[in-house]
Length: 93
Image 1 (spheres, rainbow, N blue to C red):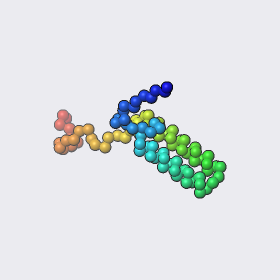
Image 2: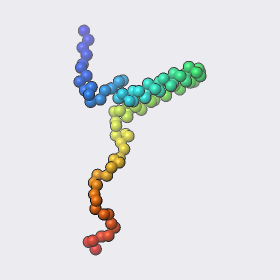
Image 3: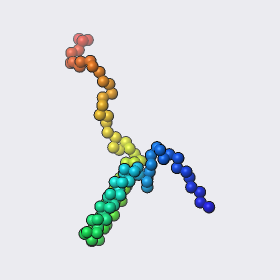
Image 4: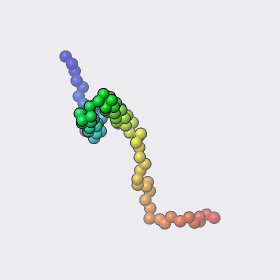
């Protein structure tokens, strides 16, 4: 009999096929768009390109999920907020 491990970290981050829910929705939109392109312009080159596009997109999204520092943006807000006037005068001289 096969045993299944209980996934207890569902509140931390829900994953579907290794992707968070918004990225999984993005890959599903890409697959749906690829299917529409394949249906309306049926050729072998389009099919290969659509499959390749979806595989590359999935690979990129899983890499971004595994290493979030790849898209690390700097902080928008300053570390220190002060009402002190900033002048270029040096009082030590």
